[in-house]
Length: 368
Image (cartoon, rainbow, N blue to C red; front, side, top):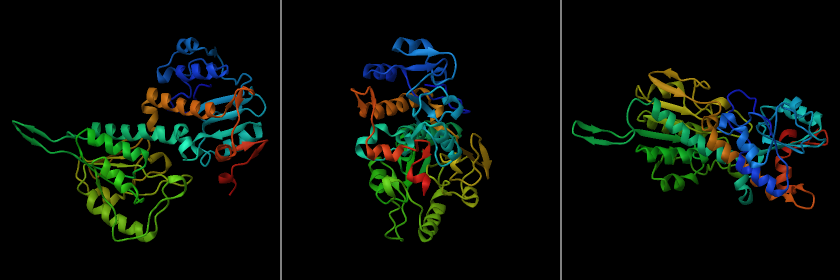
C-alpha cells in the first residue's frame, strides 16, 4: 500500500484491521512509511498487525497495489507484470492516467465501477463514502448557520426549528436527511426518482415532488439517477423555486456518473433565500449543483453562504478509511482462491470494474 499523494487526501486504503485479515488469507502486506498518519494510524500499528514497512514509494514486486485514489503510473514501476491496481480511479476524469496504466502493463480495477448488485454491496466504495459525506455536509452547514437547528422552548421565548431541504436522495441524501432530523431540523427532500418518496417519508421528512408531470421515473441502470427531460426540469425548477425560498439549509447531492453534475440551484433561486441561509454542494468537485459554488471555499451570495468540499469523506479520515479499507477487503476476499494464493475474478464483477488488461483499455464504458 502506497502513501496517498493527492492534495487533500487524508484517507488510507488499508488499516491494521484489514492488514491482519489479508495476512490471515495468506497474503503478505507491505506499507509505505507514513501512509496512515493522516488517518491517525502509525507505522507501529501496521507493524503490530503484521505488515512490512518500507521507506520509499516503490511497488516492491507487488501483485496488488491498493489506493484510495489511483497512484501515479511511475510509482508502479516496481510492481509485477500484470499487477492489479485496486483503487478509486476516477476513469472518466482521469482518462490519460488510465491509458498510462495500460501502457505500464498493469490491470487497473476501478472500485467506483462496482456494480450495484446485492452481493457487491459490501464492496461499494461510493456508498460507504457517500454515507459519511452526507453526514458531514449537514454538520458543516450547521456550523456555518448562525442559528440553532432544533426548536427550543426557553423562558426568554421560543427558538424556531431550522428548515432543511435535501436535493437528491441517494446514499448521501438519505444520511443527510437522517442527520438533519437528529439535529432537530424540519426536513424536506426531493429526487428525480419517484421510488425515493417512501424512503424520505420513512426517515420522517416531507417529500417534495413534481406531481403534474407523470411517467418520469428518473431511474437509470444500476440504481443511478438519469438526466431529466426538459418538461420535468422546468416543473422541478418551479417547484424548487417556491420551496427553496423558505429554507434555511439546503444540501445538494445530485451526480450522474461520467457527466458534469446537474445544475439544481440558480443564482436567482439563491437570491430568493433568507440572508444567513446555508447551501452545501456535495457535487462541487464535479462542476457543482449550485451556481457559483467553489470547491473548498465558503462563497457568500445574496447573504447566503455556499460551501462544498472537493473531497468530503477526507474530512472524516479515520472512519472513511475504515470503511474504504473494508470495501477493498470484502472485494478481494470474496474472490480469494486458496490454491492459487490470490483472488480470481468472475466475469460479472471483473468485466464491470476492469479498466485495463494486456496493455489495452478494455472497459466498455471507456470504449463507447
